[in-house]
Length: 77
Image (cartoon, rainbow, N blue to C red; front, side):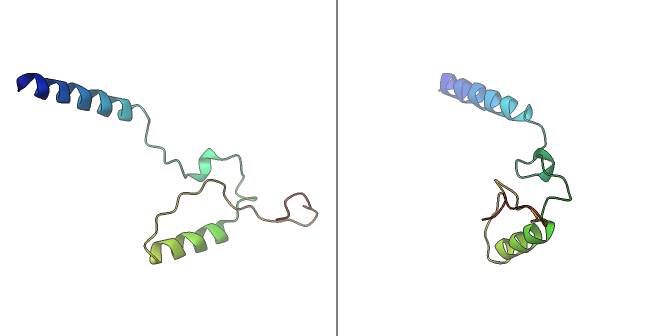
């Protein structure tokens, strides 16, 4: 029995120490992207986040929406 408890304690310790090295950066933070605040469509981000929160959903942004500027024909959807 004590060997099983020891193995569980070692596994938990290794697992927790691995997580502590990852830092406190959220994967969905805008600072991790190459978009500037001018390009990031914060109105759309806020609207979609609010809708998801109000409907009980968790939202993780993979690609943040970008504003469309005059002359930006490459970004058309």
